[in-house]
Length: 626
Picture 1 (cartoon, helix red, strand yellow):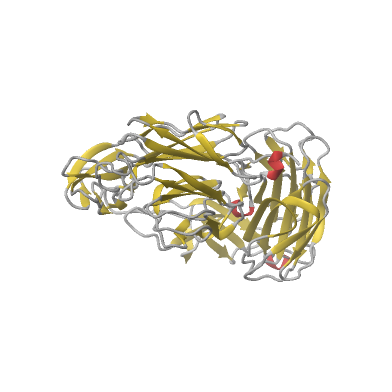
Picture 2: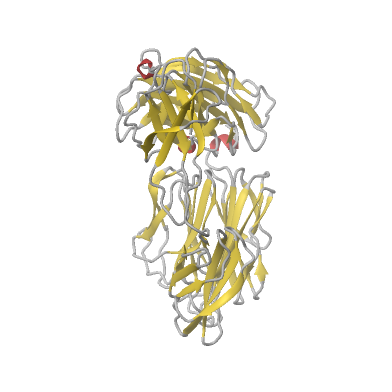
């Protein structure tokens, strides 16, 4: 089995570096690395990692948390001993693919060997979180955070960008998440761990003067990455303010945005002012100071209408020591005049038959070779069809089952690749299944292998003749192209739901074709799911674009709509939401006229939703709706 097959949990390289300042005076314990531990990535809502060795009071814990989606958010980090964890940097996200943050706990309490477990809790089950915990001694116990920044790229040498330290003899701690694997630490850095099977590094380095520093690491092959760098002050350094917290930016008018934040603190010094910086545009970086405030609020006036501004704040003390920046907050000034909703978008009219819709999805990915794989629970309530694709290796036999005892019918595969990397893909469906909360799917393997699964739950299908067609499982046939395309499926009914799956040999970022919608929570960086509608009977395929050349397999399934949805007097309308700055959208007014090119529109309904069913249309009549 290839390394890529073992490492099915990373798309992007994500390098993070944390700088911790050393003691300026001779401490009882010298600044040094103490221990490191990581967790094997498993999709879960809460993940725990235990420090193996005893921990010493006054040390500093570092927790690096990365996960493979942007749906889950990090709710809390706690540990057995009650240490308080504070965000050092992040979260940084790549849409639909990756999120990572770094936290720390200062001045920790002592713990015996194996008794302190760090628990990371997410808002929902995070996809394969990669968590590493480190301990260092000889660092500041009062206010260690000194600043941070980040960068992105795709070369084999990952570079965090510069962090400017304010204390000599800092300890820099670097970490990454990679699509391939980490080949070597950065120049001057010492490798502390490379996680298995992910190939992610944690490294550190001591620097002996203040300045601008980068953390780097070399990958075994090019891959996309996000990098961050964070600096922490040394124990015994001059007192300085902590970062202000919870900065918010609230638009008040067409020319004013009000800011507020929670106060900085300082041990051994006195805070006297806050420096407010601004730049124009969300995501801008060219900040300039616009105010000095003695309190924790600022009203920014004289701004341009309907313009986005970003802000950050840091504190100074009476000794002119400056603390780290707050989070960045953005706001957009209101428009002039009376607030007005924007136009709804993408209005679609489907006549006669209502096609099936997607009501739930679930994904699964496990790099470990085991004989039984089970998804996290999901809510399949309302579904009347479930389509599942699974892919493994080495000619393994896969037998699906689920927690509700449904009957799974194989409709495509199993298919092996004959040229290129070894892939083994198969598609099943469950017709008119038992559904509900806490639904799980289990795959039993004939031999222990890694596995990826994608589950699509549909509603509104024809449960009698559910499958209107399925393509064969196509492949790249050894060409390893970035253009993935399934074989064709020929449909016989209108408004079929098309479900496309694509499996790759390496971690990829998938871009769906224009007519399809990516099902992110059913996808991973090795198995992608997308859905679309086949409005009329015809020939269809499912295509995707991936970021690098890879062996791939692809298939498309057509699910026919329920015959009870047929209504010659019905047109189903759907659209995307309007927005309004300075007001609230409450309803949509639906208008219709009869005849191609008509212009005499009349209102036929009002709805607060993004769909409307018109059941008063005459058969075989052309209408226009808006």
